[in-house]
Image 1 (cartoon, helix red, strand yellow):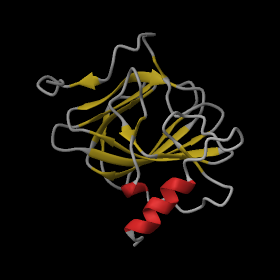
Image 2: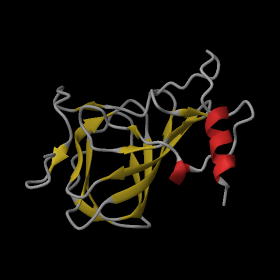
Image 3: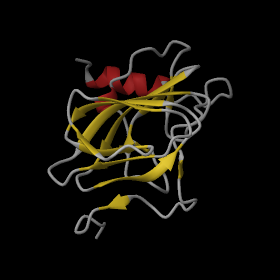
Length: 165
């Protein structure tokens, strides 16, 4: 377990804005150049699905791979969307309603590994039972955020009764 002073020091070291260490994703942290250890559960969250998803969490970028510890609040999630980079999600907590391509929707819980091929429409919504936390990995050929399949960036999916107040 890292002490508070270590976390502050890591945060200061991770906030470099020089061109070679600037993250691709606004709010993400760049790894390398002496920054190799990341206390994900203690790091600041960023919006990880602007315009189509309620996903948020810390994201760390390497040279070729980006990772995040993402949360979707219960009854919320991602409308059908796609991105040009492939993605893996490992569910740590909660249950997601998952649709990939033309496959039927499935309920997926902790311990499930999800694969989303590049440019394949998919959606993931946290069930109303509780929040979902998943670890995501994507290649760096594109940022963490994709685009809604309907071409709009009208916001996340909300189950009835789970809309923002």
